[in-house]
Image (cartoon, rainbow, N blue to C red; front, side, top):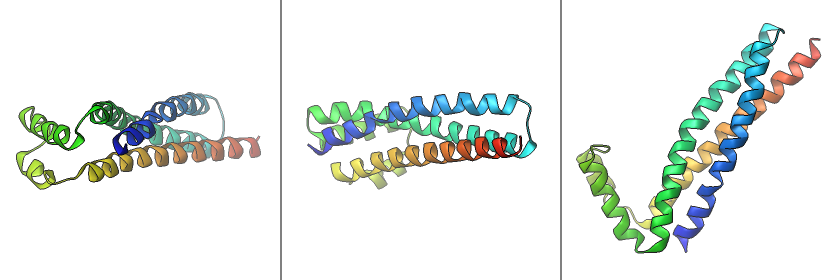
Length: 141
C-alpha cells in the first residue's frame, strides 16, 4: 500500500512540472520585454528556479516509474535488484550501494517523497519570484 501511495504522490510531479513550464514561459517573456532591470533580474531568478525544478522533475519521474514496479510486487526485493542494477550500470558506486543496502521500503519511500517535496519547493519559489517580478514591474510602470 505504501508503494502505491508513493507512486500516486510522485505522479503529481508531472502536473507540477507542467505548471513550472508555463511559469517559465511567462518569466522568459518578462526577461525579453523592456522594463526595469530589477524585475528582469527577478524573472531570470525565476528561470533559475525552473531549471532546478526540471532536474527534480526528471528525478521524480524516474522514481514514479520505479514505484509503479514496486507497487506490483515485493518492493524490498525490487529495491535490492534496483541497487544491484545501478552498480552494474555504474550509476551508483558499490560503496554507496553497500551503505544504502539496508534501506527498508519505507525508507525508500521517504527518500522518493523528499525529492517530490523539493520539486514542490522549487516550483513554489519559482512562482513566488515570478509573482514578485510581475508586481514589481507593475509598480514601476
